[in-house]
Image 1 (cartoon, rainbow, N blue to C red):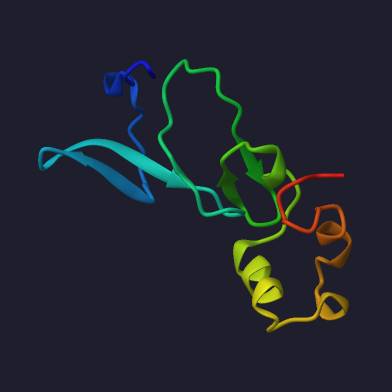
Image 2 (image 1 turned 30 degrees about the vertical axis):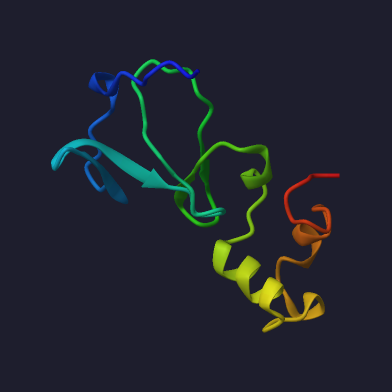
Length: 105
């Protein structure tokens, strides 16, 4: 069983991507990763690895799959077939991922 998160350590965000509500009360702000769209809560002193993408000029969740800049919209276009890999400006970055889009080679 996971230990409960102490939300009293949740960091206040000036421009949050979302909020966490419990019993109708706002208890934490969330940020959203620009590469995978995951929401996460910044916790003071947690020691969790986060990153900032200098190309997107936004924060990332810190997952290794998000270290390489491939904007989420580009990933969707490639997965939907709306954009061919040869026409993508992120072709070199996409080729570093496995077929499931999550594993780095």
